[in-house]
Length: 276
Image 1 (cartoon, one colour):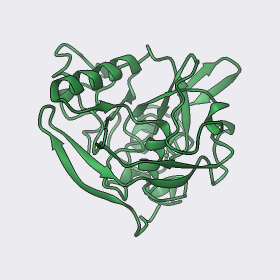
Image 2: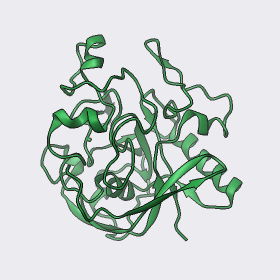
Image 3: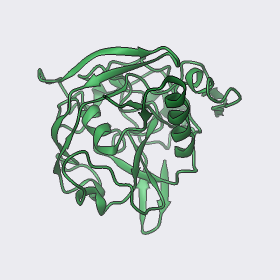
Image 4: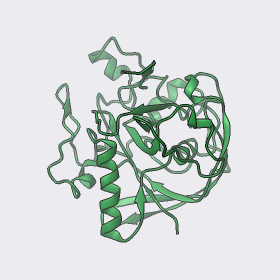
């Protein structure tokens, strides 16, 4: 999948787990049936450390984040419909995207922001989208390779719902991984193996909105600690790749900007719960 933006073309397309992976047991937010995993903050090298990504992922730079709790899974249709009962994630070429356990899609950044605000007001807790730095820190789970499971592309289908040989039978023009994950569109959340923090679908299944305004220059000009870009810009950041993406997009450092009022069939979100 390719999006054209001013001055550039962005192709939408993610390691053995380290012993030092730091995450605590998940807690459930009963109001929405959502589970959150507490992640201990720390510093990491953010960006394309391997050299197989886009220029907007470099240079690699050190970033530090504070403790936070992040959704164990992507927000599902069933959860989102507690907020918007009439939402329909639709279908793609006859395959439904609207199952209760599938991740909600065809939601804009504005929709995701509104859901977080609604849940915060309903529960008295503070929920929001993850910053881009928090998202990458959580996705890597202490790893430095392109994908949290390692460098073997053939392992992708154990850990992520991606453009695979199942999809290639229907869409032979696609660039895919040479493995079978068994799904032609989004899978129920938690279907595949988690990363070292116990987080599911951080890579693949659906793209995930982040808090930040997308700005390639600001990527390395923000403060080292808890960076989030909220300045001017036409787009918001989305991360992680989805079920329609091949190897280029399924990487922990891959970053894309998209209009905040736009949604598509492989774009959803997960939330962060502020640690008090």
